[in-house]
Length: 288
Image 1 (spheres, rainbow, N blue to C red):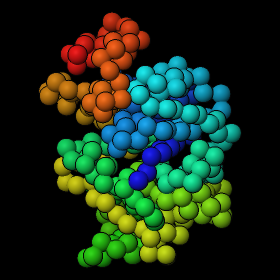
Image 2: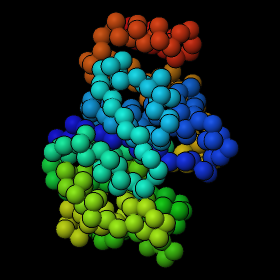
Image 3: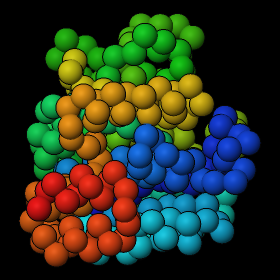
Image 4: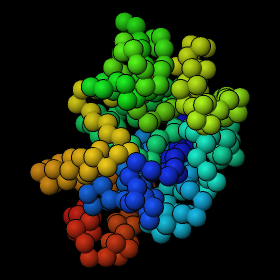
């Protein structure tokens, strides 16, 4: 059972400059909440209460201002400042002490997941005992993503980054479930041409040992990468449309914590005081 999760919230967000020159991308709003709420909500829906957030050097206080130590959500949040982006597997090297001897989930801070059966899938994935499991989802432009090619038994035949020759449309989403070997495997990786450790290389280590498995997000699920300006605002429109039509909030951390029994009605009241008079607080009031 996986009990620890890492959110990679560093990076320069250059595709969204000049906005990201002033504010970390993960703190920009997706509709009425900071982007960081969405990946954190995924970990919480999975039942994970011990979270490490990796942030850029000098931006730690910005995250602490909104998330604090996680106690408000009935969880524990620790932070590590990253000197400079060195690739996704660097999260396991930086987080070695946090991970200890446990298995771990890694989620990218700019990824958005939504789906009716998402919680059920997450609960299933965190039961991972050994190997690695990745969440995949079909896309219309495979050449823009890391792509997994599988056979009719769902065995992963190849993992390629932004392939020019298209023989699969299954994109690897920014949500990965790893056993503890990810730490040592990451240490053996060599930097790519762009001088970063590549997640594809780490996944291929597991694939060659027949330890890489896939989970489909499913046709009713939504996965959005908010890395570009258009994708960022499209995600915001998606969230606002759903919330306003259906009357519930996506990624309301206090609601997830309350439903999980991690906080009480007092915790909800404290959150209302923290946020002040706003639409989000009005929604929290309805919960109690």
